[in-house]
Amino acid sequence: MGSVPDFRIMRPMDALSEVLRLARFSADVVLDAHGRGPWCVSIPASGSIARAHLVLEGECAVRAASGEEIRIRAGEMALLAHGEAHLIASELEAHATALAALVRAPLAGELVPVSLGRGGTPARWISIAATFEPHLAEPLLACLPSLLRVELLGAPALNWLTGALGLHLSASDAPPVGEGAKRERLAELAIVEALRRHVHAMPPGGKGWLAGLNDRYVGRALALVHGRPGEPWTVERLGRQVGLSRSALAERFSEVMGEPIIAFLTRWRLQLAAEFLLATPRPIESIAREAGYESASAFSHAFRRAFRKPPSVWRKRARRRGA
Image (cartoon, rainbow, N blue to C red; front, side):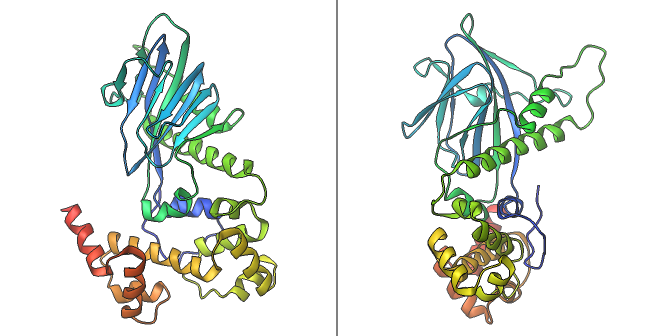
């Protein structure tokens, strides 16, 4: 969904969109399940895959490995952004089937529905898998609970996704063109809509990055910092851009975010630099300059503080994994 981030890119985007873009957020529907009667599906933990379950008909229960449990009804999504192991079921005590045993490769671009159980109350739900670069998605992930329920009733993304999954090939139909790519985009839209609704539903007076998105001035400052991190920002210059004095913005940002603007900007630049080290062969000195450091040694010192290893080791470790 995104490309290798560039400190010099200038985009008039909001902070949530920018973080998702830079973190290379992508998603796809991996299961379209119809359940009747007692059924249960187990989903393993994953440090690199977030899971979402969207109920289209009936209702389901979701229980995380931590013991937290919710029920989701038609039009609601359960989002497990941290990839915690969990169950989704009509009855959580029923025998659990592993998700991997149910997932089928799409047939001519069409996702083949799966049936579970028999004879009981009907339910239909879809399972979505989402991936991202964790260190670039950190501002968002750090603010999300391990298990989140969001209502998507009335959301265009829900209607489009339901419509796309409702189309099935007859014997005379040609394979649908671009069906897989369309399903991926709709899955991404559904998760983005869930995140948007979660942000808008947060009560006033909250703290942290998500609360900052809801604040008129802090949200604008975050959009500038995330969208144009390579600019020589000062608190005074950001204040002029968002419509506050230097002191007023500094106070408001620290109150909502729990840290000063420049500290946040420095941390975000280091996260982008970490991605450059993983994704490009560019010299460390060049990455250091774009991250706002006058010398490679100063950059290396700050990077080691943030990631517990120097830039050269971070890059070599990524190459070993790739090999």
